[in-house]
Length: 94
Image 1: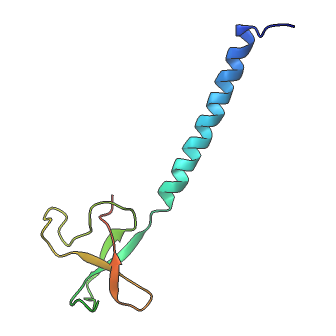
Image 2 (image 1 turned 60 degrees about the vertical axis):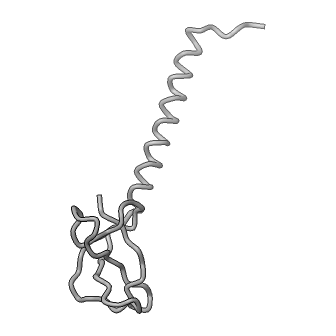
């Protein structure tokens, strides 16, 4: 039986590595696109009544979305649920 020559095996391994890298990059781009910006509002009471002023936040997990990003004690923002109440936690956009 013939043994595999290194000169023949290296190009095949490089090609396989390139294919794997292309699939990985494509999957990463698709996961980034799944993050969407949403309208967020100040919650006026615990029942979920929303203020009318809109802010932009994200669905991607991260720091909580607030009125002032530089002030962690500023009011938290919320997205509306199917009932129109401010009850969905949202995150700071990147």
